[in-house]
Image (cartoon, rainbow, N blue to C red; front, side, top):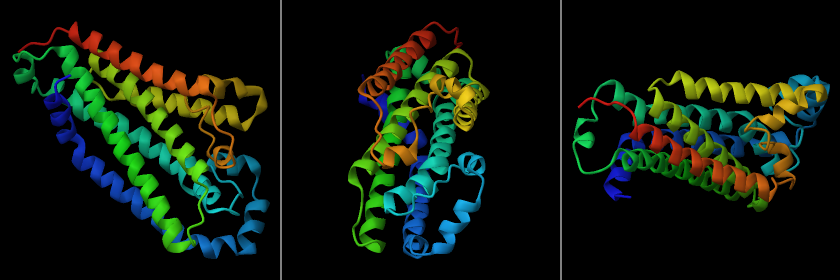
Length: 263
């Protein structure tokens, strides 16, 4: 893999990556700032207890505000974080692959000695690098918020696993997004499939009769409130996400190498 391929891919999405990172950090620090007043306010607990469980489930809110990590799992990781990842990955995959195909800006790469498969794998790795950067910014801001506003109290295991699972989901979304865009450069495919997976998990979690939908969704392992309490995914699930992402990345390069792309 030529480093220049990854470097130019990163150059394409680095501004968006930095912007998302700053936004995430600012939001987490804001949550950390207000947490002490919320955790000691009995009115908040009474309010949450009075709301229908289905509504709380739909909004991704839990009443586990007794710990800083549990609070963040409810107020950030349950909805905001996963929506950021879904949108960021699909949009930046489009910027890396779909847009260059649509505006015919691949002429230089197609006429260079670098193979199409190498170029495609480079775009996937650039997007993976951006996801790692976002994950690092998220973890750093959570640690800073704990140290700055909450006396340094932090559930390290819960924080790490919340971010690891979110990262693995992001990598899998990146993998199949690249496959779709290598085949047909339209952002509607990866975004639509991702939203279907998300809806399956949401509906499956609201009623036991449809629980199988969560098992079929890539978001089924993403249960922030449970992860914060120590219920980490199985080794099989983790390896499945890693291998699935790698296979999809390889498959996207194979598909792209066979496309009829005019110079």
